[in-house]
Every structure is written in structure tokens, then in C-alpha cells.
Amino acid sequence: MRQASPVAKAIMWSAGVTSSALVPTLGALWAWRSGVPWSKLFFLAALFWSVGTVASNWTSRGGDYSKARRALSNP
Image (cartoon, rainbow, N blue to C red; front, side, top):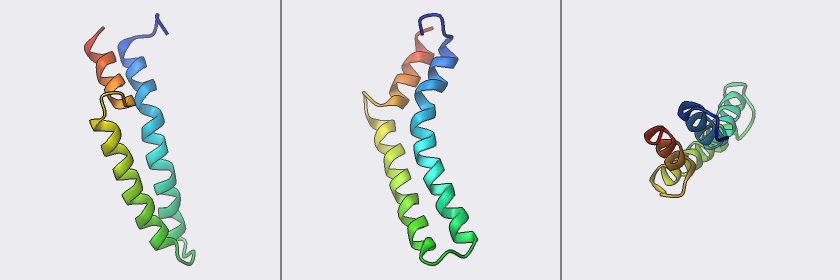
């Protein structure tokens, strides 16, 4: 970790939150577009949940996005 570049550290910190928001939302979108019953409602719930997750992490001083920004600002 000490030898990792600032960009690599930033990617590492932001990848978890980003994938936790995108993967369920894209899965629900795929289900909806495939015609799975009730999946449109699930997609909307997943979308709002993901937006909330990213927004709260973005504004949190201890969140992973903050850690990524600090990694980029402290080379």
C-alpha cells in the first residue's frame, strides 16, 4: 500500500462504493428490461438507494470517496 501510486489508491478507495451502487442497479435494470415481474419497482428502489449511498459517502469525511480525494491530494 505504501508503494502504490496516488491514482491507484484513489481507484481502490472509490471502487467499492461505486460497484456497490452500480451492480445492483444495473442488475435491476437488466431484469426490468427483460420483463421480470415487479422488477421496475425494484429498479426504482435500487436506483434511489444507490443515489443515497453515493451521496452520503461523497459528503462523509470518513467515507471512501473522501479517502480517494485525500489520496489524490497527498502524493
